[in-house]
Image (cartoon, rainbow, N blue to C red; front, side, top):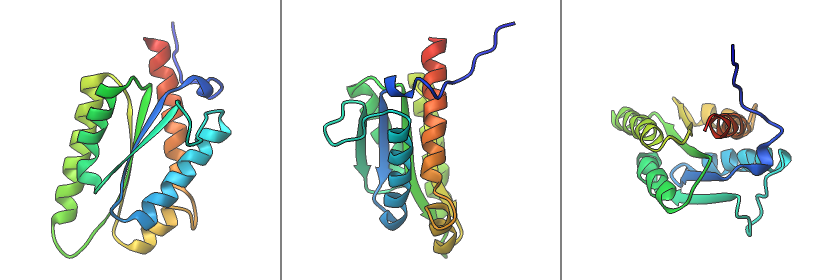
Amino acid sequence: MAIFEGSFTTASTLKVGIVIARFNDLITNKILSGCLDCLKRHGLDTSELSNQVDIVWVPGSFELPIAAKTLMKKKSYDVVIALGAVIRGETSHYDVVISEASKGISQVSNENNVPIIFGVLTTDTMQQALERAGIKNNLGWNYALQAIEMGSLIKNLN
């Protein structure tokens, strides 16, 4: 029986793309910071001159799938991380944005055989988003760990 798992010790060999939404940037900047901290502590070069990590900013979470798709056509990545924050309001806009963003990200990942980590916070309140972006726990760190694991797993399976 063969067992395949991702590795956290080979992270320094990964090429990572990050697509991030500007909308709710109070939250997304904190998530990005946690994400980059984790990648750096696992051996990736996250400096501005890095050729290991690329960051693409988009207006909102709805635009994450097309940016991820375009990014992957331009350059080869082992994994992409999609970061955003969608906070429920008084209209159904929240439901539309999160539904289309999640479907689009999944579709792009499957079409390109590249894992895309779904790092889009979906919360009912700004307080909940802040808690997940660093007050209690920075989920950006978790998204980066998922990226390292999935990036190395798919790289090893190929």
